Amino acid sequence: MMESAIDVPYDLAVIGGGVNGAAIARDAVGRGLSVLLLERGDLAQGTSSASTKLIHGGLRYLEHREFALVAEALHEREILWAQAPHIVWPMRFVLPFVPEGRPWWMLRTGLWLYDRIGGRKILPPTKRVKLQGRMGLQSDIRRGYEYSDCWVDDARLVVLLARDAADRGADVRTRCPVTALRREGHLWRIEAGGETFHAAMTINAAGPQVGDLLGIARAPKPATLRKVRGSHIVVPRLHDDPRALFLQLSDGRMCFAIPWQHAFTLIGTTDSEEGADADPPQASEAEIAYLLDAANRHFRRQLSRDDVVWTFAGVRLLADDGTGKPEAATRGYRFELDRGSDHHSAPLLSVLGGKITTHRTLAEAALERLGLMDNAGWTATAPLPGGDFKPDGLDEADNLAPLEQEIHAQAQNLSRATIHRLARAYGTDALGFVRGDMGRAVGQGFTEAELDHLVTREWAQTAQDVLWRRSKLGLWFSAEEVALLESMLPTAS
Ligand SMILES: Cc1cc2nc3c(=O)[nH]c(=O)nc-3n(C[C@H](O)[C@H](O)[C@H](O)COP(=O)(O)OP(=O)(O)OC[C@H]3O[C@@H](n4cnc5c(N)ncnc54)[C@H](O)[C@@H]3O)c2cc1C
Image (tube, rainbow, N blue to C red; front, side, top):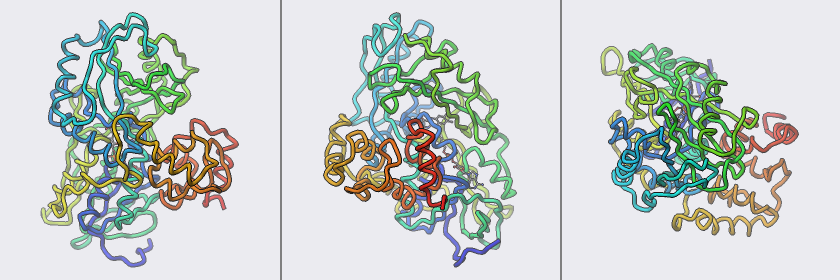
């Protein structure tokens, strides 16, 4: 085992490059700490790229009286939109009324609360809508409510949090699995990716693997570490409306049908404790059938298994006591703090639960739990890389137009679709790498210049990193284009 070249202890080591680990690393470095972030594979390779991709309060958690959590999450919507308007944007959701679902008064009351407890300033309020065959829905679905939440490119959010952390001085290591963790004097000694590091404090943000890390550290484990898998399917687009649908199912559960990448609809999610230990998790045939049934109850176009172009699954570690249905379990978070048998040793703080939406407040709470209060709250107003432009209202096309014009002025050969994709993914960062000659074309508007940016600035190493996390071009690339991309990666030579 190699000691790292200059083994100066870090103030804080964070294990896990998902949304929570990356957010904690970013917040901590901005508070003046020296920070090491260790991810065993690629950033966001776990749950944080397999979410429904909503920045939302979680309307249905009101049913479980999670008012504080819903309010905290709702407040985050406009904060996150303001700091990353390229990868976060408002979306309207239609909640149709179906006789087998919740009564009308209950929907109205829930949405009345949803509009009021979350500090909504810009996002438009709920309104009633007539459906009657609109949005591709069956003709017996006649009315519903339309409300606001936001959408996020989850994997890019994680990468940009890590980028901001690194730009501020954090040491971000990917493909660096932690294999040993033990106290040595007043420090943690961490073996990861063939190197040894030391840190005064460690945060375990390993998502579904939090328990494994506690085992490696020989630290006490909470009595229950409950994991629930959620799966999604992607099908050809079911309607041309920009709004998403929030569907009530006959078993009382709910699922989303969200327009995605112009050509697709994303449908999910399930909640299953079976198979949640698989690493990586996969959507089961039973879950795929369940989601197809849910869509077929609501949409005119009837889907079959052959319509499913992609599936993905993620596992949540829940912060509850392990009783009750998984869909009713809290989506809140809690921490376990271990200070060793003498209660004064180097701390190990483990993160249980959470949502993409609450990553920023979770990071604040985690650092507060360790007593790190200097410069607290700075992340509320700091833009993420590429997000230093201000949305000028709710029209997303208008918001991106000035940036798209700048990209076009720098690289006039790019198609409108590619300019739009670059503005969306990179925001003003795109101006750093677009130019007249973008180098070799890989496919689907993806070029060598973009690949260079991903490799040098965003830790991309494999075609998977590029196609399924930094972009979602994986749904569009042919086998030949994937092979060409693989041959152009630095690891290929
Ligand atoms: C199906 C589903 C849908 C969801 N939808 C939403 C949504 O729409 N909106 C929302 O707000 N939230 C949503 N969530 C919740 C959200 O996705 C999670 O709360 C969040 O992604 C958890 O992030 P994390 O950083 O804690 O875990 P992860 O993203 O799993 O990150 C943990 C990381 O630790 C790494 N790791 C593990 N072991 C080691 C090791 N030994 N050494 C180094 N690294 C290690 C892993 O590789 C992984 O990258 C959803 C969750 C699921 C399951």
